Length: 282
Length: 297
Picture (cartoon, each protein chain N blue to C red):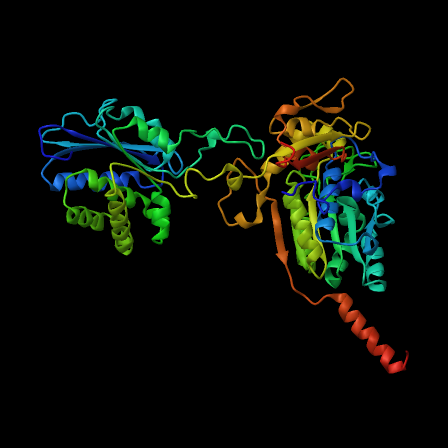
C-alpha cells in the first residue's frame, strides 16, 4: 500500500473529468468501482493519457468512457469492438481499451466479440456484467441468472445464461479473466495483466445493478449484493477442489485462460508493408 | 539443585505453539526417567496450534503424586518466548526459582488491538533487567538469534535446553543422547551444536542477560510501518448515499447523515485503510496518509 503523499501514487481525480462529476450512475452501482479499478490499472501500467483510447458502446457501461480523462469514443450499440479494431489497426501506437456491458457485448455485439477474439488484435475489452439492461428499464440480458425477475421476465428468467469467459476462450481470446467489484485490488491487478497482454484481452467484471436488478429480485442494498456476489465466487485456482453444495461456485474468478496466439495487428502490418514494397511506394 | 533428594523438582516449560515446548519437556522427562526418577508430565497444546500459548509441566523425584505444579512451586521456568515467560513468572518459587528465557518477541494478535498503522502493540513492556532483579537466578538469552547463527533458528528450544542442563545435575552426554534420539535424524548435528552453544553460554554466571539487537530491544519503528496521519475527505456533491462505505468500513467509523451523505462520524477510529475510497462507486472519498515525521512530533 502506497502512501498517498507520494507524488506518483494513484489519485482517481487525476483520471476523471471533474466537470462531468457526479456521474449519472445510480447509487451503489458497481460500474463506479470498476471505473476506479480500470483507471488505477491504467495508472499503474504507466499508460500516457494522450496515448490511451477508451471506446465504449451503449448502456450504463457505455457512459463510463465519458468520465475518463483520455481520448474517449462513445460508439453505437454493440459495436465498440469494431470501432476499436479499426482504431487499433490505424493507430497501433495507442492503447485501446473497450468498456462494454453484458447486453452490448454478448447480445447486440455478440458477433463482434467472437470475431475480435478470433482476430486476437491487441485490445483490452472490459465487460461489465450486471446481468440486466439497466439503462433501458431492466430487460432480461444474455447473462441474467436463471429464475431472476426482470421487466421482461415477470415469471422469472427461464433462458440459459451465457458464460462470457467460456465464449471468449473458445473464440480464441489471448487473455480471459473474471473478477468481482468487491475485490478492488484483485480486479486492478487482473486489469493490469490484461493491459500488459499482447493480444485480445477479455475481462468480465461482475458488477451489481442495485436499483433495478437488486430491487426486482429483492437482493438487498448494494453492500449486501456485493458481499453475496463475493461469497459465491471461487478463484479459478481452486477449480479442481470439491464443490461445497451449499455454496454454488459455478463462476470462477481470476485468470481463466491464456492463449499465446500471434497478434493480428503485427501480421496485418507485415502484410501491408509487403504490399508497399511491391508497389515501390515510399 | 538437581540433587537426588527426597524433594520433587518442578520444571515448567512455556512458549508459543510451534516453538518446541513439547520437545523440550519430552527430552527432560525421558532423561529423568532414564535416570531412575518417577516422572509426571502434563501439557496443554493442540487448541493453541501455531501462535497460541503452550505450557508443559514436568515433575520428577523419588515419588510424584500430582502431574501439575501449584502456583509458586516452580523450581525452573523455561520460557521459549518472552511474554509467555512473564505470564508464568508468578508460578516461580520466589526465593530459589530459576528463570531461563528467550528474549525473542512473538507479538500475538490480541496485542494488536489498535489497527492504526504504526501503532505500538500492547506487548509486555518489562525489560530483562527488571525481571532478573525479581528472581533468584535468571538467564535471559537470545536463543533464537544464537540458533540462527548456527544455521537454523528453529533449534532455539535446544539452545534453551543447553542452558537448562547447567541448572540440573545430569551428565552432558545423557542430555545429548536423549536429544539425538528425540529429534529427526537429519537435524541431530544442528541440535547437538545448539545444545553445546546454550550450555556454554549459561556456564557464564547465575544471572546473565545477553540480548542482541534482533531480540527484545529492537526499536519498534524498525519492525513496523511508520506512523501516519490520516485525512479522509468526502466530496458531498458526488456522494449518492449508497451505504457501501458505511457497511464495508472495518472500523465502522462512517455514517450517513440526515441528507444521506456519508460522513466521518468517528475520526479517531479511522485507520486509513482506504477501503471506503476503493469501494466508493462515486469516487467521493479520498484518503490521504501522511507519514508522521520526527520533526512533526
